[in-house]
Image (cartoon, rainbow, N blue to C red):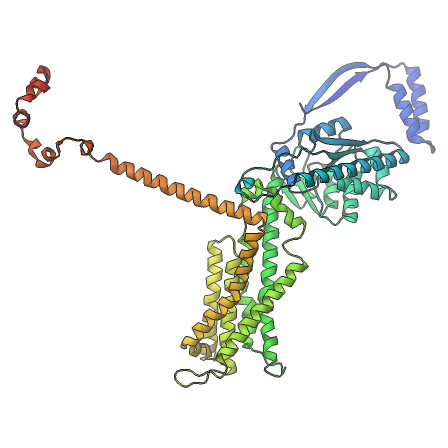
Amino acid sequence: DGLRTLCFAVRYLDETYFTDWKARHQEAAVSMDNRTEKLNLLYEEIEKQMTLVGVSAIEDKLQEGVPQTIANLIMADIKICVLTGDKQETAINIGYSSQLFNDYMDISVIDGYTYEEVASQLIRCQEAINEGVMSAKSLQNAFKQFSFSETELTQFPEEDNTTSHAVVINGHSLVYALNPQLEESFINVVTKSKAMICCRVTPLQKALVVELIKKTQNAVTLAIGDGANDVSMIKAAHVGIGISGQEGNQAMLASDYSLAQFRFLERLLLVHGRWSYYRMCKFLRYFFFKNFAFTLCHLWFSFFCGFSAQTVFDPMFISVYNLFYTSMPVLALGVFDQDVNEKNSLLYPQLYTPGQKNLLFNKKEFFLSALHGLFASAVIFFLPYGNYMHGLSYNGYILSDLKFLSSVVDTILVISVTAQVALDTSYWTIFNHITVWGSLAMFFIICLVYNYVFSGSYVGSLSMAMYEPQFWCTVILTITAVIIPVLTIRFYKMSITPTLSQRVRLKQRNESARLRQSDHSLRAKSARRARRSIRSGYAFAHQEGFGGLITSGKLMRKNVRNFVTEQLGNNFKTILSPGEERIL
């Protein structure tokens, strides 16, 4: 029932025995050799022949949602290690009740009291884990299947019934396991096991375990606790989370984040943590793209100006490109964007794994962003350059000058990078619309104000270019040449090798479409019912009804009996009973 029990016992001692025991206890307490062993022998001596007085039971149940939270974190490929001060039996029961352990796990217990015992137990445990991993891989290769059907995404994966290993180690054995000679074996056991519980550990040992993982593994550690004995562990981890509970506020005050209950950790990691990583990676990839596209235009222009340090853009444009023209859309992207909603983020914990493997931003993604910027800069510069080289307007004006080319290129550059961030946005809000369209409007407003009000050096160049049909054709052609190849590659990859995020997003979009369609059909159905309810039922009769009678207005006559008799003739008396006839 999750109760912590404590037994109370009593023993009556005579004064002579207690005086002798106290003297021996004082001698053992100040002994310089084997002090702990001597004290333990004296404690064992006096704690004998005791009479049980009573038992207390303190309720210490798991919080609401703890098993589900731990199960989802394990599905998200997060390694969980429980560090507790409870005894071994209690710790194992907590592991089962919290779904950290299951019935298919082989639990290895490390409880040695000497260096040699702990070393041999670690070796046996590592061998057992390696054998289990090899057998599991052989089973997976034998029954491996690939499926991209929608039904695969509509439910949780089936429970893994393959044998896995869990490790339980107590505080006495942990003292030797943290020895530098056994650190490597201990870390191998920790990393290869499915779950691990360290029981009867001190607050210092909790911090030492966290420090060891930080030192030996390329991983981010997170420690969560609710008591004062968890403070050292929380401060040692990369991310510390304190739970506000009944044991004081020490853990909460020493942490980076504070939660009211443990189950909120699932939402913190799988929703907000994943969204934060997704947004930051998208922000960085776009930021590198737009700056490469802007900077490399100068490189292409250098081949035509003799590398004379002449810039292709107006100095004013260079100053405000990252400040006004392209900063707000990417900020909105980094704040509000999300690939899937919070419901599906919790429903599919596997979406968290790309962040652990750095799949969304790494050296490869940086190189692709730089290559994308290189391609965009080449298209943005060379297409307008080739179009306006030796160009003349319909009025005979020369179009092939530096200021005219600069105005055309910077206009296409701003529109292209803004269109790219619009295509990269997965979740549109009112702020995204304001920043995207506002940035385009701000570009034209600043150009006009700076050139005409403050007499800029490029005054009239953009206005003159916008009067020419050749300008709009160049803008459309260049933007299309920049965007279409990127869209083609993305659609190809999405169709051939879709990621889990893309598949979940497709499912989410289909569900939204079905809900809108069902709402529309329900509204339409209710409207048809309302119209049907005001129609006369006689419209479906095979005989002539009373439609002409109702519309003739003759029902307004005072003498209804004479009118009805006139209409129905002699059959009237056979239809009505005498009582009904008297009423008429």
